[in-house]
Image 1 (cartoon, rainbow, N blue to C red):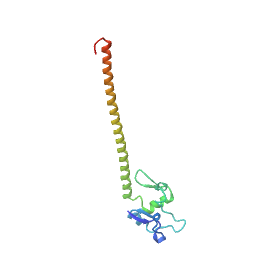
Image 2: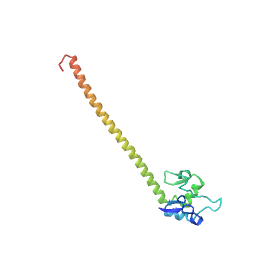
Image 3: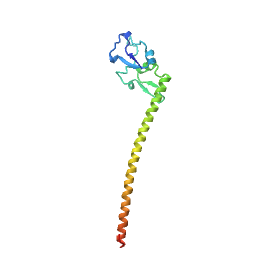
Image 4: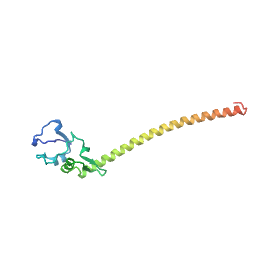
Length: 145
């Protein structure tokens, strides 16, 4: 990761923290010194000011799809659907799904352990009731307990 000036120094950008963003070397190179100089020029998405979900959506195949003109321009300018980034996103999606399933599995194991403990308690209660039933039957039949 590199630190990039959202508004380039060449376009009077400064070192204010709000103007500094992390990006990979390739995105930094693709962005270069771009800054919209006319109202009709598109803007790049500013990651410190707006959530990505406002401009792009991540699809199941790991690509980003634009939701806005800003998202479309950012994807195109920074080449955000280049194969290494798509592969990285897919890997992150798989890891997130594996983590989700692992949490679910662990929760299931806790429930099973609780159920087994409850079952053990019920079995002991059942044995105790059977002993009591035998004792009562012996009393009813006139046998000594």
